[in-house]
Length: 97
Image 1 (tube, helix red, strand yellow):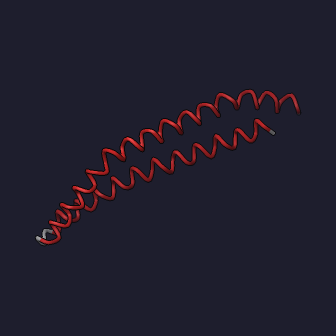
Image 2: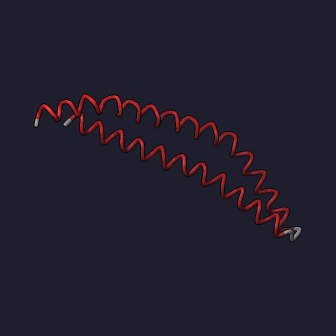
Image 3: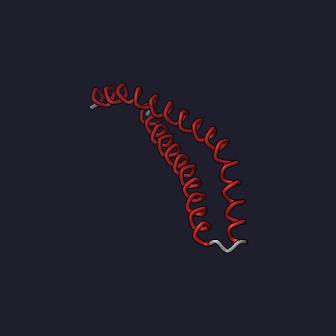
């Protein structure tokens, strides 16, 4: 049983490194995309306010969908990064046990 656990620990090391690397890359990509999507979302919000004032509801709905998709993309990147990071931490605890 101990021999199988040692073999699994050895096999878990590259997976843990891959998880940490993936988490770093997703975090970096999310931060860069925040720099790009931040001004875009502000512009879309301004356009949405303008269309609300002009009572152009179909364009307001489309702008709200675009705004929601931008937020969903950034939120999804954060969730994926967190989950992969937690999996890497669990592998690290398994290796240290």
